Amino acid sequence: MSFADLPFRLDRSRNATAQVFEHLRELIVSLAIKPGTVLARPQLCDYFGLSLSPVREALLRLEEEHLVDIYPQHQTRVRCIDLAQARQAHFLRLSVELELAYVLAKDPHPALARELLGLIERQRIALAAGDLASFTTVDLEFHRRMYEEAAVPDLWSMMRSRSGNLDRLRRLHLPLNGKAQSILDQHAQIVHAIGRGDVAAAQQHVRTHLSGTLNAIDALRSRYPELLLPADYQAASIAA
Image (cartoon, rainbow, N blue to C red; front, side):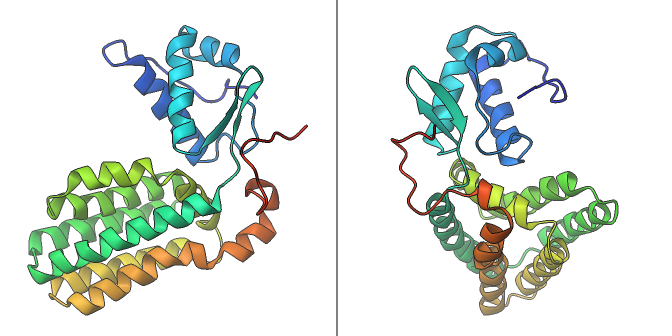
């Protein structure tokens, strides 16, 4: 593939491997780089203006997150969306965010509710403009703020490192069947339940909110069969 339309500027004050990893991960998760794409190391070195070492280390980190498959002495390929990994990420995130809803609703913070409503308004503006990239960015900020308010910011970092395949599913789902509007509505329901201290309602709205994409798996597989791993996928084998 060509990286000509995917600009990158190296920050010499930061670790090069981290920057390569972050940039490639965002391109993969946003589907700017499609599943099945071969990532040739010489091409990546030219694109980033770096030697092989930081590129190789970044690819190994992406493999750990199940976003690429590395076939030694052959090639590196962007992995199709792994539903098993997505389901595990969903299970983990749901478990954590149900507890977040409990903690935040048990001891409501009006300032947090106002801030979260402000983020929902920013999402609404992005959706009206058809800017789904900004919509997604603010969506992440919405959830991150709840982790921070509950004093567990490290769990947010851990969650992000395990959510690449789930995030790719969400990117596929977002433009379909009013999904973005339902996210706005569900965010508002979560905030209002937390704001009035209704633990049961807050947790139910979180459960509904986080389960929508996995409930649409059959429709997504039917619409994008080439982007999802087949059920009999074996990581050790490679397509011709």
